[in-house]
Image 1 (cartoon, rainbow, N blue to C red):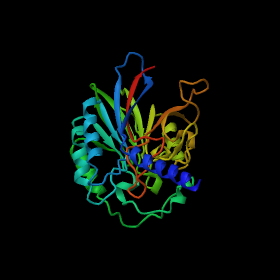
Image 2 (image 1 turned 60 degrees about the horizontal axis):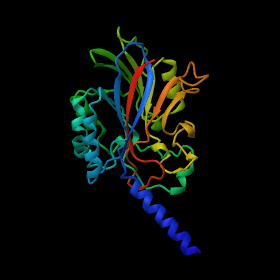
Image 3 (image 1 turned 60 degrees about the vertical axis):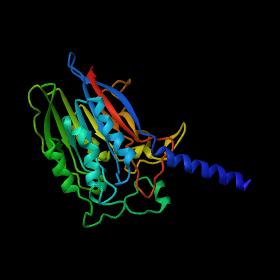
Image 4 (image 1 turned 180 degrees about the vertical axis):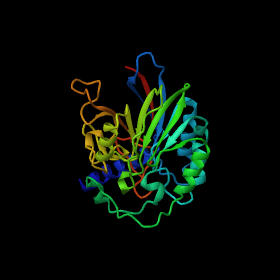
Length: 298
């Protein structure tokens, strides 16, 4: 019997490692634009946690350019190795042909470290913040900005889509307390969409963006729970957002705006991301993903 249990456990672990390579594209539709407005298609990439040898992941990210999105939003945690900057920029290069914006995650500043697997079950398992970043976050920000993407590190910006302004508000990673919400600023006349962008969907930031009257919030960080149970979902989120919002499209602070009783809520999309820490290269019932979000008329 023990041999059978061990066999099942080994098979489960092997599948969980395989699932990290089963990249998928999710598509969601968010009815938030004014009547008559043209759709805005936003490609969200998140939590790549790239290491130099991950050729399959690099080619998959490059292939996403075939979607021809109107806007690309990168919600951070791009790196998992000090030498991953050049491979990352190669992966993102086809996407920089489109308007884009980005925020940073903790694993753009600090390389991942080994952790006791039991800590995964803690609701908000933060590591001590190291004093000196050892990943090339500054070089990454400069390269993406030079490619024309908006740096939303605790700031606001505007990009043009279909000749109309899209207003963006972002914060640095709340998971390591780098978030400072930008000062109020009126959106330009004719703004078609107002987006809030954060790496980690901490309650304080979601509340600030909801109060700022954004149309939708885009986040990552959770890995969708990474290890999920069928018919139950994520065990944890690695932040203080509730488990049922570990991935996918939701409302904040209440139900989705299209659900009964959801009036007054803001749309919230949380990506399960496309990578893992190199020290925990497993996923279960939570495939790595990017998301094509189509914002359409109400």
